[in-house]
Image (cartoon, rainbow, N blue to C red):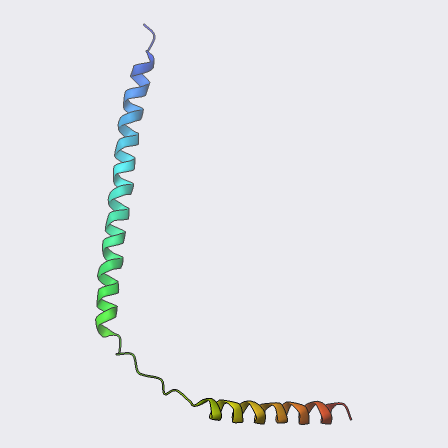
Length: 79
């Protein structure tokens, strides 16, 4: 007696369902672990500090100084 297609197909389908279920459970566990870790790290992280904003006058002064320094460096290099 020859084995029929269903003799091979049913065990294959069972194996596929078991394998996909294991992968799904592993991924769900991984997502849960990442979520717990993110919450733990979030509670340990320091509070964000406010960065002092500089006035546009200070920024322009720094940029002018930077331009002067670059111009001097280019001039000395070209000598």
